Image (spheres, rainbow, N blue to C red):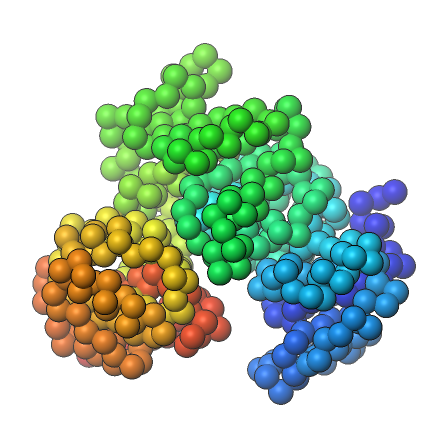
Length: 455
């Protein structure tokens, strides 16, 4: 049976009428499935119409969700924003219906090998870097998953001799069963999404799903400096390759004497000077190491990888330079949706930071974040649902100049009134965006627009 005929003449229910859900629904319909899209939100809560779905004869069930939706269903496809713990998913599992994520659908229909990257932080930068490096091989490359185009769209487009590079979240791995990347990487592991996964143990188990179906000739790239990630080697069936920013490795990819280096295949290779890498910060050295490890085993040339590192400008919303106003640089780090990610942003600057933070609180520990903030932040501007808890944690750490505001516009105007060279203004929320925005991208775009309107 061809991989792309698995869904033909089957009935699929897609949960979630967002971008991911609508995309996979269209793909499944294209593959010959009878498809219904369901969302608990009523139609008036959506800001887009569904005429394209109706034109494609895709069913729509919005608002009340009950078990009758499962009648006759072969596949339940769950969007990343929907927890597998909801009653409808449990009911599907009890009926023996195959429950999967969009990533699992993509794997099942893909002819090309997959390269998959997960971790708490750094996924987008590393995934994008890997995509750019693999393009230098001359082979067709698709990049998707948690960023850009949906992975199922890429799976249909990329031929068998190409690559699909996937940024994979723990949410997407919840619904993975046969998902089997040829090369996988786990960048780091810190507390995140515990409101969804319920415990750090379950969160880690979800991340480890990226390699559990691998075979002995597959590769798993692991961060040696992260003890929890390093220890995953004990459960990995594939070939383990470590990377380290902090120490020399006898085998693997590491930073030493200001250089990105590799000890592989009995050779010691110098890839690139760290100062030559266009994206700055210790966390980006880790991302570069992981990308080089992945791409070396995917067949990219060392010289080509080095050129990408020297020219890659970074990704939108991740310590992204926005503008300079009155000698003060403004940076958009809206993608920092947890304290660990914001810590990496703070560490990328030599202090003198006016920090804008806050949003939907994930209730993660703030101690380390506030400790670093005390050293580097001269004014902390807080907003959103988390602002009071953040303000109290900042005060306990002895941080001065804590400001609480009601809106993004007020935050940017206050930062502008306070900022003097050599200070920088950094949006790095350490929180999710859902209290005020649809996603972190929208939050970042609003921030950039407000900054650019400053005179």
